[in-house]
Image (cartoon, rainbow, N blue to C red; front, side, top):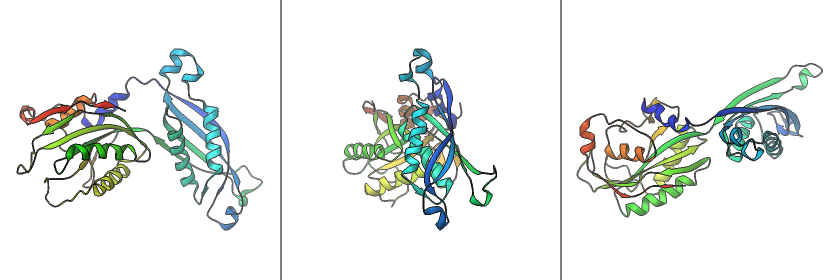
Length: 289
């Protein structure tokens, strides 16, 4: 399996289905013109929610299903409290709010229709459509300066506090030998499986902010560091951009990456047999959050 697709294997047991709430009235202030911002107007939304039907199909109980009437009510209540210039911004915010509110939801598709006074008396309306989904991602954390164990624990807390991110599992903690620049202390490494509404670029920005807050200095390439956070895998994404390569280029050439991914239920084949000869020692078990 391609490393870029392997993280999706964690979703294979889902029985996915969609529910719809259509023609939902959104009473809110939304527009770029002064006259549009004087008082609320009514827009209409069509909402489709994808979620895992496994529990409700098995039990036939509403408690195990996603309440789509509650979805409509939540969208209406959220829109009423907001003000946006662009319908696009409103749509994106509603998608993320619904995914944050309804934990069963895996993805939201949203279409918002807006009538314009110039077309009053006609059936013409204008619309925009967008979608958001929960994505699985794996972050790799490493440290070999100062109290590395404490630094990794603090980093896990900070990652868990990133908006629209949720920690799912951590791998074991490993003590690993430095690879590319060997004249430095051993590293402590741990991998995290997270669920996020952020894009890879947004997630990268958040993790770099954590590195900076933790005192990361980039003085020597591949050199010692107080904390290092790498985006190893992101569900459905393969990128070779300079600023963001996903899957991470070292995924199959580093033994600690392979062992930590195995802890998370993801099997990666080493690029050579010699990879598994690298120094790597498990020193603390992983956990579920």
